[in-house]
Length: 359
Ligand code: GDP
Image (tube, rainbow, N blue to C red; front, side):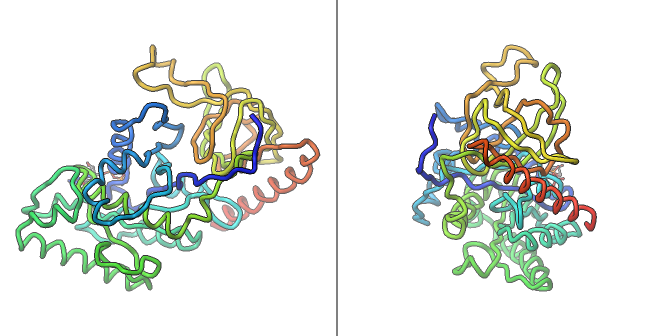
């Protein structure tokens, strides 16, 4: 396949952060479940290290809300990183920022902002990653009537006045906490200018209530403020190593999040290494095999010829044991570029290590 001048809007890369026990894993499971249940023919919803939530699935779950909000959606969906928390986020670094386009910050409605929430906000602020707050576990408010998978703005109408008031009280506390660190925050449906005010979306990761609102707010923000970042090229790929893993029979493999271009089997790449960059050819590109096609637990992967950004893929190539999570991956389009790319990749690794040392 030839490269082309063509560009397209790729899925934003989404990370989930927050304090321990706030519900990050539960929320990710719910999102993944939605993606898999609404799988469209021809779309791969399970990636390696991430899940793809196609827009069609979002449209279905946000139906009534979408009609009210009337946003014209240009993004193809979201690529949600499967591992929550700081570590995954810090491995998604890129020069001067992060390859995560947007974050969901999960806060327990009854606990408000906790120490790791403040830490997450600092990290997001320093990397300039916009975020939406999922104010989670609303189903635990005494007297809450659950409306599974319904939009929050509908569910709130079926609550008793005392319960609605209790939620307001809890939200006010969170808004005050945000104020104390210099952020204006408000319930998302009361915000006019999303560039200035942090959106709070009440949800229950357990019942799925509020998930339509959360995903629509994410989509709206991505489209309005990130579209330029989301322009991907049909060109040599760029990615970041999220994780290294030994696989029986394959050696050290890398989970790579591709954020631009096309990664192909056989591509010559430069991958950052602890000591020096690794120049290696991609032997195999692996994606998860759909559950219904798996014949045995070992039969987990599907070989693919290429992946387009945004994607999470496992690469098999020689020399990956010398790489490190957080390392950049760059495909060489012409051999003469090698020296420049080697220099760039090593520089990036060095700044990364420097940042780690001072962290
Ligand atoms: P993490 O540490 O942030 O990943 O939190 P988990 O997803 O592991 O959740 C911590 C606990 O809170 C688990 O027992 C979850 O079942 C529970 N939990 C998470 N979300 C909700 C929710 O929306 N409602 C209720 N009632 N429990 C929840």
